[in-house]
Length: 251
Image (tube, rainbow, N blue to C red; front, side):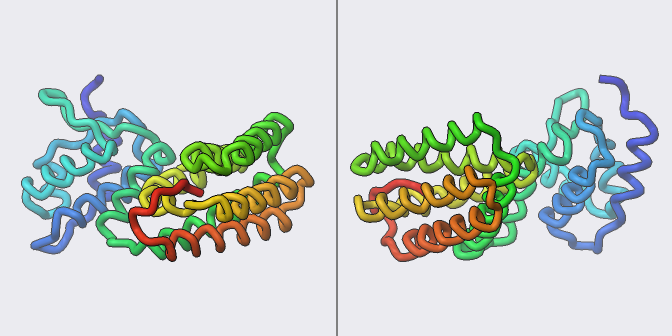
């Protein structure tokens, strides 16, 4: 890797304005994240030394060191002993890790995450209705068939259910949207895993998925969004009303 070029240094130091004294490490990390996900820094770029970052931000080197350590754990940067610290990926590639960081330090409530998921899933269904091809429709049909065959096997039902939503998000052909949904689903997995715990719930979920698929196949975005809104409302209600620890499957 070549030495850190002058232009990226200028870009980074110019973008990182000084912070108030006593600034917590989380704010240092936030400021770096804003820069790294802005698209102005190329993947693989070597960052300025800790002392230069500390001087630019007007914070202690320990704060910068701790912030970089946290970003390394989250996969945002790669710290190479004896070489330097490098930005790992592009802005879109960093989005899942960035969103996860924001959620963790922001203390989001489960209900807020569920609301966010509802909105994104509905939008995905609308996009997928106009962007799905025959191969996608076949994959979606296969997941629905698997769900129908697994009405009494909640673990298998959950896998098919998740595959349906993953396929749908890919069909929307919006990588940023897919990244966001991936993170939210991961954060909600402990709750979603108890969303279906009996045959009645499984049958209801199957009908809801079939309605979404029919609308997608018809290319009707409004109908697909409405069908997904109904599914998300009932799925969320089940998640919020079932007691923790109930063995179940995800939605």
